[in-house]
Length: 58
Image 1 (cartoon, rainbow, N blue to C red):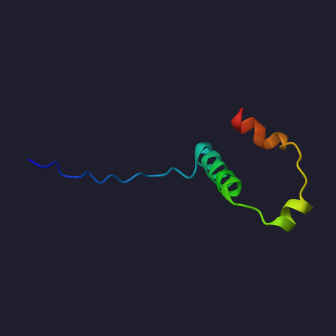
Image 2 (image 1 turned 180 degrees about the vertical axis):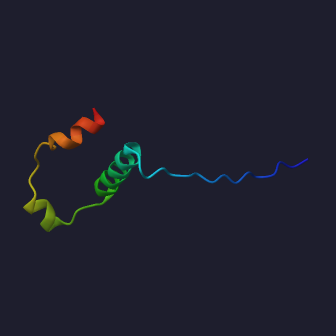
Image 3 (image 1 turned 45 degrees about the horizontal axis):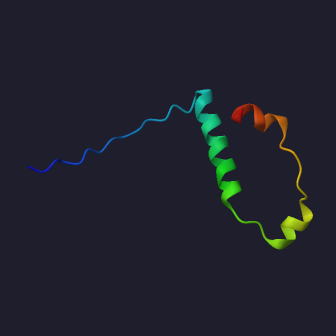
């Protein structure tokens, strides 16, 4: 007997603060995953992360 696949719908509560944190983390992950071009690397030297972003991770 084959099992039937179950489709689930996830409801997102956009009024809560958790959604905003997950949204920011997803945007950060997309930016980190993107490869910068050579000109952008020359213009932006390495520097420490802003304090606002480190509170969320650590």
